[in-house]
Amino acid sequence: MFHKILIANRGEIAVRVIRACKQMGIKTVAVYSEADRDLLHVKLADESVCVGSPSAAKSYLNVPNIMSAAQITGADAIHPGYGFLAENQQFAEICDKHQIHFIGPPIEAMGMLGDKARARGLAERLNVPVIPGTDVLADLDEALKKAKQIGYPVMIKAVAGGGGKGMRFVTSPAELEKNLPIARAEAEASFNDGRVYLEKYLIEPRHIEVQILGDRSGNVVAVGERECSLQRQHQKIMEEAPSIAVTPPVRKKDTGTRDQDWQRSSLRWRGNH
Amino acid sequence: MSSDEEVIMNESKKTLKGFIHELKEFLGILHSYDATELEWEKDGYGIKLSRKATRSHGQAPVSSNGKNRAKVELFHVVSPVVGTFHFLPEMPQVGALLKPGQALGYVRAVNVQHTIDVEKPGKLSEIHAQEGQPVEFGQLLFTIENERVS
Amino acid sequence: MDPNGKFYFIEANARIQVEHPITEMVSGLDLIREQIHVAFGDPLSIKQEEIRIEGHAIECRVNAEDPETFSPSTGKIEKLHWPGGPGIRVDSHIRQGDKVTPFYDSLLGKIMAWGTNRDESIQRMLCALDECEVLGIKTNIPLHRQLLRHPDIVQGKLHVGLVEALLLEKVFG
Image (cartoon, rainbow over all chains, first blue to last red; front, side):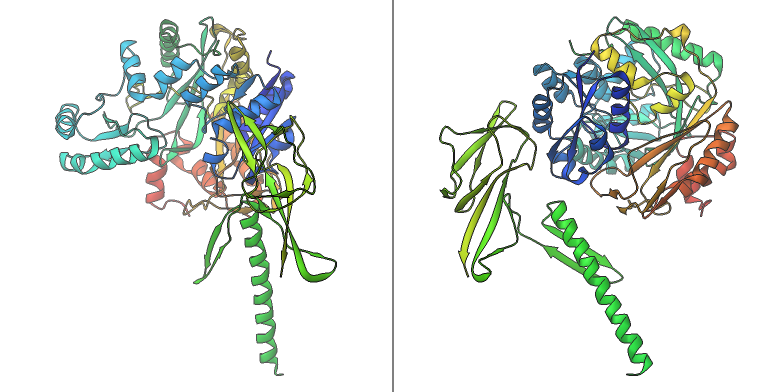
């Protein structure tokens, strides 16, 4: 098992990961910003390293200082938690280069799933139903044509999206014309990637997730679903498991197909070696 | 003094006390986050504080010999990155006079070396760093005395 | 999932999710432990046919924010008491005396309530929210209480626009 894990995060998830490590007998390294010196994750970890000034860009997203912290403490793995560096493919590659295990999916899978357009393409190839939508839009003419085919209302979404950034709800061609450049600019500013696509807007849908775990040998399990429909501005507020909207036969079919699809695909949740 | 005047006096004392208390808090926030500017507004009144940013954290003047003629300012040279500290072949000695730009050592991070140098002239008063020591961001490496005549 | 029960794939998040504890509560698994094991190269500790989902779990995200304006609330936590009792789990990092700063997200912690069925988990969550005490900063606990008492939510008629619609109608307050 790993000897020492560095937790590249703060707050409750850092505490959660440290607790799991302690229960498994693995040593832990906390990293912290100057604003977080007195927080619980710093106290609970066996060692701690200050990695920068308060702004996240200079501390919890500071890849050189975090890698350096792993090296000076002799950590052999990094757990990114959620947010910050958790879905940063480049960071996973740097870990790999320095022989430090990134606790997350393999690099190819991160690239595939982090790019929403590619993830959608993969789902389509695996016959998993997707919301009617488009590929990356070249220009306004294409957007107007495709929106007409799909039928309004439609959603403009950023390829690199998350947290509602670069996302716009439009109900008419005029609104699409007005909002397309805004969404692009917002996506460019937030993710350094201005590519956007369209998706049909579903009326009053539920947000349901399936928890999937997979290992390096290709075993994949689905651990039921979560209902995450209670949100404000695309931020979840309250979640529950299971969902009362998912009936047992649906659950069996859904988790069953996911399971098979994921086994068929090349995406397996494993370490990086 | 009429009782009305007394009330006003007490009120203004309270306000002043509250203001000083808040000012202290703001200064604390500025310092602890290494921020350079802070703006605060409440009920139509506002305050703006700013201070000069220095990588070498200056300390309050220390009086020497109990007289006011010479003041010694202490500067802390801290590590700008996480890594391993190393001295240069020519190790600095306590008491040495340092020139701005003079290198005292370097911190080796992943694939990169960060030179630790002096920003202001002064006398090296304390060496906190050790050869090969792992250091974190903001870790104290050297203290420099800057004597100035007032 | 649309109102007719048809599923559409949206995205796959290649990381641990904030709300993973509710899955842990109904499955008995430790997902972080599994994650660490498989990253090391160990096989999963469980097979699909061994997975049992038991009871119902709810998570409330406790944020440092004004429950009405949703603007972040910062300051010192003067007093803190997290709830406990059967079926209650709290994942949090805050302690009395900690300062909540404006630099990061406003999540103070998560309260999870497990029950043998949905009604029981709602009831337990309501008790837990009532017991919870965070003084010195504002939190969204009042919003959670109101949400869990709203008929649509009690009956499970949920959709992604529900909270915003209820807020617009000024149902709460």
